[in-house]
Length: 630
Image 1: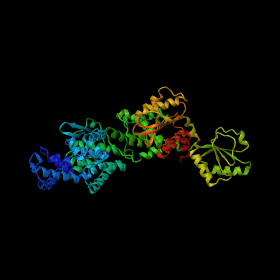
Image 2 (image 1 turned 90 degrees about the vertical axis):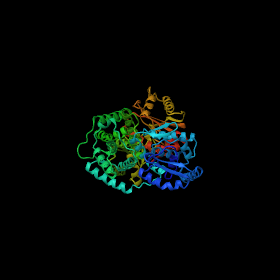
Image 3 (image 1 turned 60 degrees about the vertical axis):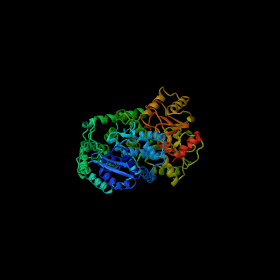
Image 4 (image 1 turned 90 degrees about the horizontal axis):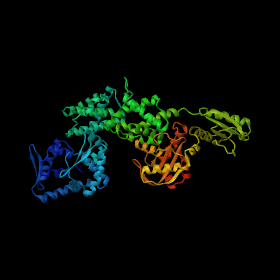
C-alpha cells in the first residue's frame, strides 16, 4: 500500500484530532518520523483544497476547505497507491492480517471495503480466516459498533504472530525497506560474545530467530508497544538465560537512552530458553522430576501402542530429557520453532515419526493441546537414533549354496562367499541340486544357486554364477543388507485390500475398514474406538492424500495391514486423504516390521506412486509398486 498515505489522510479527516502516537501506530513509523512526514505533506494538502490543523496537546486533523478539489486529489492518491492493493483472496487475507497487526486503533469495515474495492460479505468471509490465523496466537478480533475492529492480545503473542508473518507483514502492508544489515551484524556479534561468556548454545536457525525477535521487539518498543506485566508464574522459573537477556536489553536500551522494563527482559529470557540447545555445557545438567515424569509417560505410551520397550533405554531417556527442557518452555509460552528437516524425517523415518506422534500425544495432557509437527519431527529424530542403534547390529543369515555336482568348484565358490560376506553370514550349508529334495530348510534364510531350481521352496532363491561376478556381488549384498521383499506379502494381504471405501469423514472411513477386516479376522471389541482414540493424540495424515492410522495400544495377535482406497477424498486432520493404510502390529521391534515401515514410507510419500495405486484400485498394482520401489 505504498507508504500508507491514504489511510492516514482518511484518518485525519475525521472530526477528532489524532495524536502523533496514534498516527505512529497507524503508519508503522516512529512519532518523530510522523511529524516530519506531516510537515512534508502540509504544503501538498493545502495546495489541493485542504488545511492541516495542529493543536498542542490534541494532535492533528485535516479540514476540507474546497471539498470537491480535495476529494479529487484523494482519488488520485488512492489510484497511485492502488497498484499495490491485493486483488486475490489470499493476498487480501495477508494484507488484512498485516494491517491489523500494525495498528492499535479501530478501523471501520466500510473503510476497508472502500479501500480494497470489495463487498462487506467478501470482507466478512476473508476476515474469518484472518481471525483463525490470529487465534493460533491467542489474539482476538475485537468488534465495536460505530468504531470498527481491532486486535486484542498479549504483546508477546502479537510479536510471535508478527515473526511468523514477518516478511508478508513488512512487504505487503508497509513496503518498508528493512535497513537492518549493519544493526543485525552488530547484534549478532554481541550475541555470540555473550553466548560464549554464558556458555549457552543455539542452533543456526534458532540464532537467526533470536535476532528476528530482537528486531521485532525493538521496533514495537520504539512505537510504544511495550510488555509491562509479568505473568503470575514468572517466579516459578529461574533461568540462566535471564542473564543473557539482561545484557541484550541493556544494549538495546542503552542505544535508545531508555531503561528496559523488567517484563521485557523476562520475556526475552523465556524466548532464549525456548531456543537453547542443552547438554553440551560445562557443569551439571539437572533434570527435574517433572520433566523426567513426562519422558516416562511418553515411553509408556509408545510401549502400549507399539510394544517398543524404550523404558530402560537410558541413552534415549537422557536425550529426551534434555530436549524436553526447551520444548517445555516453547509449549508453555507458545514459542514457534522451525524444523527444516521435517519433510526428510517423515520420508526417511516414518516408523520413528509415528512413534514420536504417539509419544507426543502423551504430552498433550500436560499442555492441553497437540504438539506441533515441527516439534514431533525433532522427537522423531531422537527415536530414529534409538532404533538405528538397535538395527546397527547386523543380524547374520543362514545360507544354503546349491551347486552342480563338481566338488572343487563349489568349495571355491563357498570360499568366495565367506570372504566377501563374512559380516552377513552365520552358517553356510552346501548341497547339489539332487540333494536339495531331501534337505531340511528349517533355519535357512536364503538359497544361493548356480543351477536352476524347479522344485517349490519357501526360501528366497538368488541365482549366481559358478564364480561370483560383479553383478552377483551387488545382488547378493543388496539381498543380505535389505532382505527379500517377499516378506511384504505377510503384511499386504489381498483379503485386507479394499478398493472402494465409502465414508464422508475420518470416523466413517475407519469404522468401514474395520468392518471389512472383521470379515476375515476377528478384531477385538473396541478396536475402531482405539484407532479413533489414537487419532485424537495427533495427526496420522502426512499429506500426499495418505493417512496411516493405528490403534492406541497393541490389540491383535497377528500383524494386520489394511489398505483402503476411498471413493472420494475426505478431510482427515490437516489434509485431504484418499489412501488409508490401517496398521495393527504385534511387535514393532521386529526387524521385518521396521523394514515394512521403511519401504512403505518410500512408497506412500511419493505422489506418483500414490497416484498410481489410487487410479488403478487393484491389489496387483499395489504389490507391483511396493516390489519395484527402490
